[in-house]
Image (cartoon, rainbow over all chains, first blue to last red; front, side, top):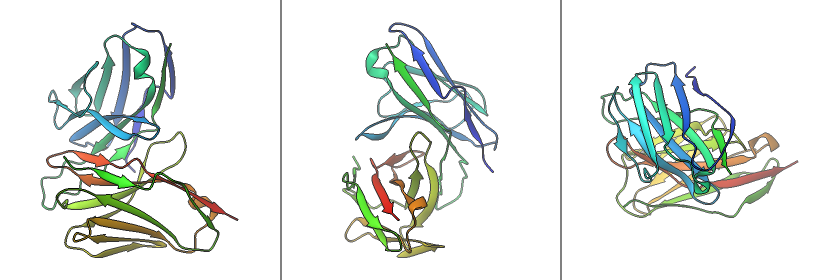
Length: 117
Length: 111
C-alpha cells in the first residue's frame, strides 16, 4: 500500500513564525502536491512537483514556498505565518506514469491541522 | 477555468437505500474523473476513476456514471450502511499534472 506521511497532525504557531510542513511518500511516485482545505472551499492546490528539484505554482502559492531535494520528500514552508493560513494542509503523491490516458490517482497523507495565533 | 459543483447540502438517507451524489463541471470534458471519500480529520481516499469514453464503472456497492453531454457524473452507493457516512469528493484532471477537487458532499446514513 502507498503510504504518505506528514510530520505533524496538529501544529500551533505564532504570527510571523517560519513553519515547515514535511511530507514523505514511500512508493517512488514522481508527482507530489500540497493542498489546503477550508470549509466550503474544498481542496486548493498550493504547489506541486513533478520531479526532484522541480516545482510549479498551484492556484494559491502566495505566502508559501516548497522544497523537493529528494524524490520521496516534499516540504511546504510558510515564510512568515499569518492567521489566514490557519487551515488543514494535505500532502498527496501520484505515480506520474507516462501513459495515456493518464490515471493520476492521488494518495493523500493524514493532513496537518495548523493553527496560527 | 474548469469549475466543479457538488451539492453543498448534506444528504441524509436511511440504511439500505441507494445514495446518489452529483458532480457537475462547467467547461471542457476531462480525460477522466475520480471520486474520493474523506472522513473527518483525515485525508481523502481514492474510490473510483472513470474515463471520458466510459459510461459507467462499478466497484462492489459503488457505481459511477459519466455523461459528457450533460457534463455530469453521478456516484451511487447501493445498500448504504452507516459506515458509508463521510464526505465524497469529485475530482477532474485539469491539464498536465493538475487535478481539481470539488468541495464535496457530506453523506449521513441513518441506521
